[in-house]
Image (cartoon, rainbow, N blue to C red):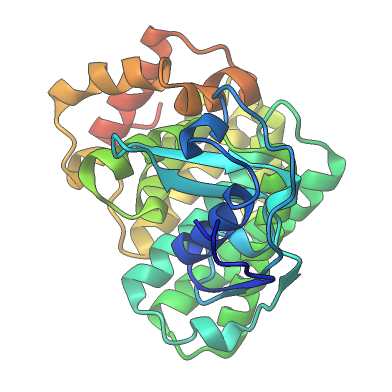
Length: 312
C-alpha cells in the first residue's frame, strides 16, 4: 500500500481500476489499520490526507480522474469502495487521444459507465441544480457521441466529447452519488467477474424505471438531454422515453440488455436482493442516496425486470 516506500507522488495511468488502486494506496498509506475498516458504511473514517495523485485516464468512462471515490474488492471478493475528498487527484490530465485505440466493447462499456454516473447522480436525494447541470450535459454528449466512438473508433471528435462527458459526469457523481444500479453492478461484477461498466450498462434502464415513480420530472429532463421529442407528452410518458432511449443505446453499442445474458440465474435473484440490503457498502446506495425506500420486494422486482429485460 505504499506504507514503507517514502513516496512523494503517485502517477495513475490507465482506466478506472489503476486510478482507483493508486488513490486507495495513497490514502491508506497515511491511515493505519485494516483497509476494510475504511469502506463506506464501515467503522472508521480517514483522518489524514494521502500522497498526492496525478491521474491520466486511458478510457472514457469512470471519471476516476476527478472523483474522490475508489472501488476495490474485499477479501471476500465483493466490490466495496472508499469515498473522501482527500482522494481526489491533485491533477487530472485528460487527453482524448489516450482513449482513441480502445476496442469497441471497452469503448461501449466504459461509455455506458459514464452515462450511468450522470443518470444515477441526477436522481439521488442530494442532487442539485449544479450537479444536474454537469449530469445533463454529460448525458447529451454521450447520447450524441457514444455510438460514433464505438462504431467509428478513429473519430477524434467523438473521442474528445466522450472524454469530456466522462469527467463531467463524474463531477456530478462525486458530489451527488450513485444509486441502485451501481450497488447491483458491484454485486454482479463480483459474482460473475465482469467489468463494472458492463454491469452498470445492463442495469441502468431498469434502475431508471425503478425511480420513475418518484422522479419523473428528472427523467423527462434526461429524455430531453438525449434528444427525445417530449414536448407533447405527459411527464410520465416523457420519463418512459428516457428509459427506452437508454435501453436502445445499450443495444446499439452491442451490449447485453438484460442480466440473464450476463449469466445470472433466476434462482440467484433472491440472494442478490438480500445482499443488496445487508452488505454495508452495497446497501449504502439504497439507504443513503435513493429517494425511493427500498424493500426486499421492491429490490427483487427490480432484479426480476432486469433479468427478463422488461420495462414497465
